[in-house]
Image (cartoon, rainbow, N blue to C red; front, side, top):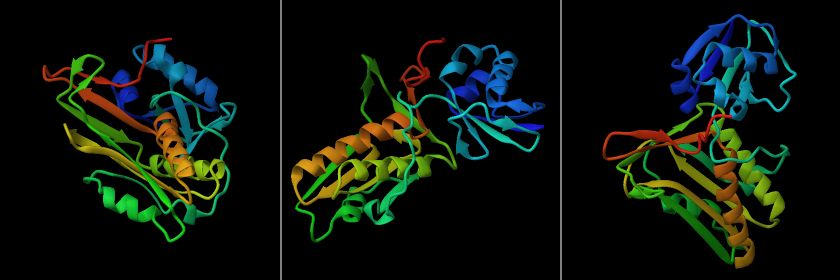
Amino acid sequence: MSRIRYHAAARELAGVADEQVAHEGTLAELRALLATRHPKLAPFMPRMRLALDGELAADEGRTVDERSEIDVLPPVAGGAPTEDEDEPREAVPLADVRDAPLSIDEVYRAVRHAGAGGVCLFVGVVRDHAEGKAVARLEYEAHPTLAIPELRRVLEQVVREVPGTRVAAVHRAGALAIGDLAVVVAASAAHRAEAFAACRLAIDRLKETVPIWKKEHEPSGAAVWVNLGDPE
């Protein structure tokens, strides 16, 4: 029996967080099977990413057997992962997801060094509205094993594209109140142009691919997962 884990909006649509499914075949075939098992999830399945045994699966022709563990991951903010490459880790001194309050100083210190003539910071803060609706609080859910490696991969890709930079980022998970810090990104370089470019790339790419999901809670008690989109 393969173990299937559902996250964030996928969990709510499936109505189950974890289940055992008898399936031996490809990931693509399993995707179709899960759509059949969970009618509410089915219209959204084309937008879900699958992870096989702790790794995001780009090739859905891969084989699933009774020992496999599969994660069903809803979209985060659009986009698709880019190819993975190696990068010296000193260029990315800090990449973390945590359920404790964030420190701007910690992220700033992570990228500061004697050769850095410019440091650019982005701080994402929970606001009290979204798309014309009032927001009472936010809830962030991060994949327990994939979020931090994917965040590091994103930052390493940024320093490859903007040479000579050092980039760090920390994202919050859990329940956040209005005014809380949701994400802090910092980039340093010898000159300001590269620092600005790397910081902008880092936050944009982070929002595209890192498996962290945001749920907005309205004062009325209604709540919605952001960027789930319409059924396909």
